[in-house]
Image 1 (cartoon, one colour):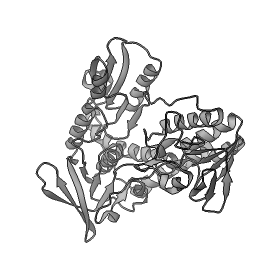
Image 2: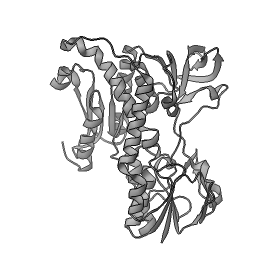
Image 3: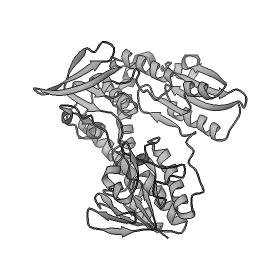
Image 4: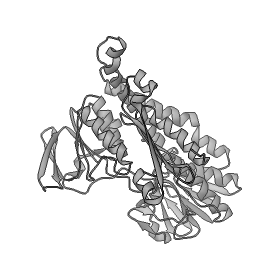
Length: 428
């Protein structure tokens, strides 16, 4: 059986390796270099920038520990160079292309965009053409942009690594995970930050307690948070920008004068780059539609990762890639279950979640909710970081955790442990 995998990010690489292990003849076609957004542009470099921001922030705690010294100055060029070093190290350390080839996969890098010619044929921009019995679409997604007047003046998080200087005043448009990460990092770098969000609260997909306390923490750090507002226009003003946004409550148009604006307004899939219509593959809102077996509307074509528009996480992409490959090679026997997919964010303070929010859980189950405040625990108090909480949501009859939400230091690590308990169906 010949399997063609489009895309060399976490979903595509996992799918290619799994299909090869199951005995298929596999070709992986990547438009640039294997590794995907997570290594080349996303979590790896952003985590490095977040660490630098955290070190700057920690200077504010020195006095509590009897330490003295001048506030660190941010050398942006050196900070960005370190982020690039980490990204390159992660890529080279994994020897990704060589490792994949050693596992029997034919890897084609720098192929440019690959498009369907018909349901069984793919042609890349470099002229390469392939036919396959099964195809797995794993072409990922990209930073979204608003189609508004002056929208071309805004940057996205992908552009942070190309800044030559820190802007003194920044407007971040969109306050989900990516927008909050950007706002937090830039605020720690002493930028004045405005954070604008269409929804009534920031991180609208998170548990409400996380949204409320994160917004409170942001405001305490001087970040100007504005919710329930719609950005309508960006306008060039000398060396800077003017951002016009309309408040939902009274329809007033407000203005913000900044040196740079960043869009953090979603993550559309790259389905448009593969000409899905030529293959008869259905797309909704920019994402390839899949069933529980990760099959598209064409039963021999599967999709995995960001391109299907589900959890948009590296861990989820790998899981989907594995399941898509198994079902492509062995037949549709395994269904995707996304109940226990932990997620964390590199904000300050950090937050992490797994499972249902409290509102979702109460709508489905008879629940008990327990909250442990960081201020009641020795470790956060000793670290001079007492702000935060850990919320567990437990289904009463089965005494099993159905959701967990953590805000504060080490939240990403804490939520991983809870996720392991949930996966094992441990009882409380």
